[in-house]
Length: 356
Ligand SMILES: *Cc1c(COP(=O)(O)O)cnc(C)c1O
Image (tube, rainbow, N blue to C red; front, side, top):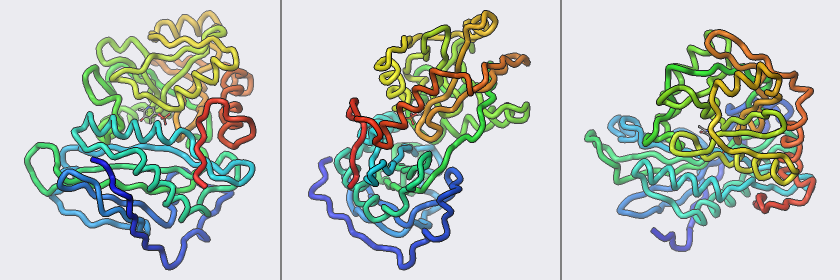
């Protein structure tokens, strides 16, 4: 499925909506930039590449993607560095993961160089939408869905891939209260948990709503088999500081391979923090808490970056973690990532890709 020389048709908006956006005060996920990239897959290949005004799309009620869940997505960010250049954080890893999700969901892969070229064009056209203030970024949402009109349960033969973007501020603005989930399951062994597939998120809404009714923000998921081992929190990977070590569960088919997670582990090891990827039981967390060794806990993901966890609820009792202002480890990592993203230090890992 090689792309020939990519020919993107471009239709620009007549009037930009950018004046309507308050860049000093951007909420998460409510503002969308002027344009989007669209590609269609049929007869075994991708084509009809176009950049058009962001807006509605027509579809038929029998469209497969709406019925049986062949829909996958990615989430990534573009930053404006201190010299004004637009930089992406590890975008190739995101497009590779989109293709892994595609394979799991019986959807066609899409060449990474094609996606990178499309993204470059899109960002060039909407470059004014990349925020200039720190702590803000242009969020980028590539996604793909099945477009056949057919009612049988089978892989679609036609698909659409879209990339749209929008300026975002912080995802969470306060430290998180999370609840250990010991009944519902996000992902099971052999399931689709390691794919960014729509159904995983739909299925998580109800248990999350129940946790929110009890006063928590998010769920701390445990394994589906015994509900004994920690997996992820909401749509973030999760990390703990136990004693001096940074501990996080290994990824697998129930834990998404987060790019932020991987970056945090590499950065932590680089600055001399002991990193330990292993299963962590809820009991271990409880014991570490009781002995005063549980010093820090936080979620990691593109949208939230590093989201400190304030308390962990388990079977009706809350474990209060040390005040966020006293947490040295996550602060160092968070600052370290920020310095790389905004180009304040040398990018010694080769993570940043210039979009100019
Ligand atoms: C997207 C996602 C993450 C975070 O991945 P990043 O690549 O760091 O953004 C973690 N867990 C789940 C379930 C996710 O969907």
